[in-house]
Image (cartoon, rainbow, N blue to C red; front, side, top):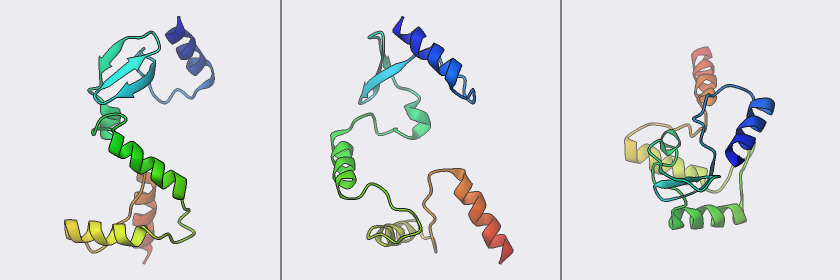
Length: 118
C-alpha cells in the first residue's frame, strides 16, 4: 500500500524520463537498501556507481557533515579554498595538464564548445 501510494504520486506529478523498478526505497546501509514495506534488498545497482562505496559509510557521512557545516557549495562565479588543491592533486595523480570537475555531462559539452571556438 505504501509503495503504490508513492509510485502513484510520482506517476501523476513527475516527469516520465525514467522507468524505475516497482520498488520504493526509504533507507540504506552499506550494501543493502530497504523499501517502504520493510523488505530488504542487496543494492547491486549502487546508483549506477554513484554510491559504489556503499550507503551511509561513517567516514563519508562525517566528511559530508563537516563540509556542509563549513560551506555547502560555492558557485563557480567565486573561487574557494579547496578547488586549487583538488585540481593539483588530480592532475598530478593522473598525469593530466588540467581538470574540469563537474557533476553532469553538460559542463563537458559546454567546455568542448568553448575550446573549439578558440
